Image (tube, rainbow over all chains, first blue to last red; front, side, top):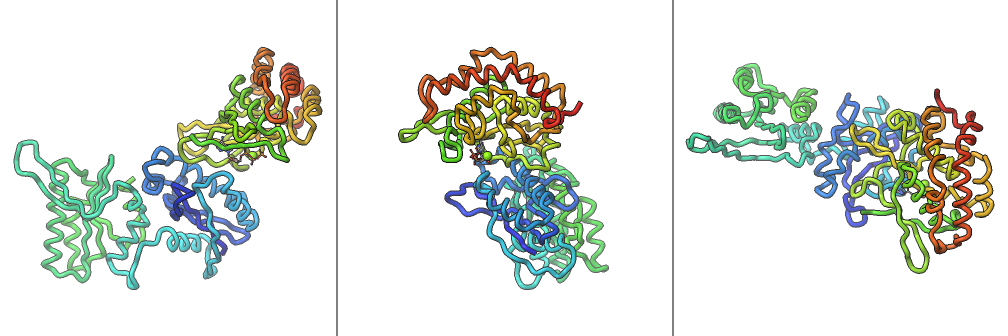
Amino acid sequence: MEYRLIQFSRNPLREEGKNIGVIAFDGSWAGFKAIGMLDGVERAELYGYSSIAGPDYRESLWVFGEWIEWFKSLCMESEGNRERINAELSELENQTLHFISTKGGYYETTGEHPETALAELFEELVGKPPSGPKEGFKELLEKILHRAEIIFYPEFDRDVEVTIDPENGASPIVFTLDYYLGGEKRVGFKKIRFQNARVAALDAKVNDAIYTFSEAQKTGFLDKERCVVLCDTPSAKRANYIDRLQSVATVIDISKHRAYWDISTICS
Amino acid sequence: MNAVLKADNVESPQCVYNEKVATNLAQTLHIPNAAGVLADTSGSTSFASLEIASPGISLPNIRKSWISGAAKLYPDYVAALIVFDILIGNNDRYQNLKVSLFTPHMDIFTAFDHSHALLHPWHEPHKAVELLMSDSLIAKKHTFYGHVSHERLLHWGRRIKETRNYLIKECCEFGRPINTVDVAMQKKLGVALAYRKKRLLHIIADHEDVIRWTT
Ligand SMILES: Nc1ncnc2c1ncn2[C@@H]1O[C@H](COP(=O)(O)OP(=O)(O)OP(=O)(O)O)[C@@H](O)[C@H]1O
Ligand SMILES: [Mg+2]
């Protein structure tokens, strides 16, 4: 499978581009995958491009959507023809300097569907989070947040402390969120690891999450459906924690296949 | 505001003049086209085509598989552009057009690149003028042939036909040479276009088989 990486550069003459997508083709098939192109959705979600576009191009985010369709159409029109795709990508610089197609290379596929190879390439070249040799809870969580693409949002933040001054003059309410997505629809996240956690520590974490989300909802800071617990699968003995958490939050098991999808749905 | 600078070249020896006249005509006739200005650079005049949707990131040029979608979304612009290209004898519309097609409420349909029209390079300028004075279609190929309604074509044909002659001539005359295009040649083009616009409806009717309008 031949591929070329697609980059966006804010300042083409001075800066390297950032990887935003990959186009893969094998002579009879071609596919394009870029940030924002979630599985099963016709048009790309463009919000994730705001940090890539930067403040100068904030008004131009929609143009990313038009270019994504351009790359998709190139794949469709060419039916995977290598010469045609390479020729059009080489001509790209006559139309724009912001979108760059790199030289690319070849990718060994294991013979299944070309879509799988494209997904792997995308994951590897564009969506890959920094990850260690073994994939633990932390690594999986990073990966899912990448995959859900919320970390590309400029309003995404980690380890946020929220202070709310109640109107009645009572003392301020303070709580912390592991992840927080600001903007119009606020979403707050707490991460909880059930496996290999000591009971006392786990109790404290669960209680803190329940306190945080109750306060957040009481003060109107967060809606219940936007209070999210990201966790792994608890053992049967620890399953009762889930019930308690569900009374104040949406609980997403990040080891489930749909996790990234559920997260991006809540955030969009 | 960014601009794409164009200069006369071997392939298109009257590029700058053609571009500026096409821009003037488009403005006078309300054809959706990129604005452009003449710029004097080191002894010769060049043409600065002002970037569409600037400031910002440039849109892609239209693609083949977008043509029918664009025709559905912008049927009136499509008719206007076809009639305009027939008027100026532009056989190079091809993908020289930027449209927004996938963003709701974002209406952009803007043509550019008229270096191969008017005194187009594969003819001597006086031969080009002769050809414009004939009932030849000149624009034998067009992005939107087969994607336009007869009614809209006629509407734009009539509109342009009824434009005053002096307005057309003013678009062509600069009162000074533009690089190699002297004042006399500019006058000749003005006369030719003023004549051609009157023949537009005939030219269109004569070439139904090429234009392939829908009814
Ligand atoms: N006003 C404009 N706004 C945005 N992009 C433009 C504009 N004018 C030209 N471009 C871009 O620059 C490219 C080249 O310009 P243009 O089509 O005018 O010249 P060309 O086809 O290279 O040369 P020729 O004049 O010989 O046909 C276009 O394909 C288009 O992507
Ligand atoms: Mg061109």
